[in-house]
Image (cartoon, rainbow, N blue to C red; front, side, top):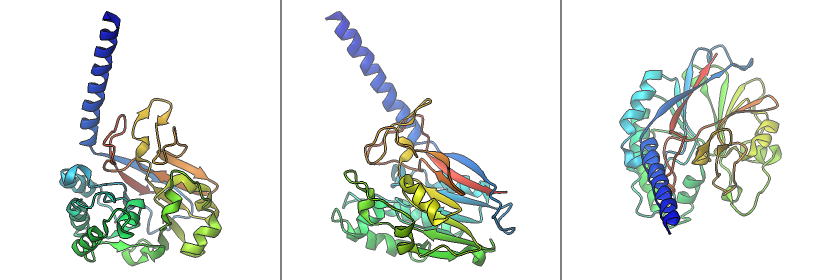
Length: 290
């Protein structure tokens, strides 16, 4: 009986430590910088920085917004790239103002480009009876962000040279936990068209699962999120679980290469329905083009 009580006390102490650490990490923000040195980077982009944010999910009800903007201001980026899941798609009573306030605050200072994740898709499709939230959200945003729904835009318009930014908007079945459809270059071309020759291409693609398809499509730089760094990050093993409930996902966080394509996967700037982060402080990604 005494052994059982000792074990129980130890487990309770461990659980309390996890809760406290997760609470602390969810309220932290860090800048994570990547040097991008591809030979095809146009001269106008070299020496400039772009900010990449993903998976905000109404982070701590907007309590971090001022700190996020302040950290971004310290970088003085040429533009802000949003990789999706800036809001939640499950609760019909969700307050969308934290996300819209953040985006509006950023748009007052920087060009903002926004590709969607699975949560935007669910809100728009009324998946959980949340379509009214999308109407409220877009009304608040106005023209603060340039939506990229299987569209592209030339960043020459903001002085970055021959750079084209693409936003990939895939159907919800590609996010399924129970099936695993293939997303190859043929599928991507059907949504985005073929990439323009002679350009530097940046692809906002919410899920990193399909890196080989992105590479075959010939993206130079892919920016993804979705996995939240695996929620809990273990030394040497990396992220614990993906949104598809797969343990130790292959593309959980960091920089990856497939052929000539570089993919950067962020752990996100907020939290998910499971508000847990261990060894996994939320981040703002800074892309420094050399």
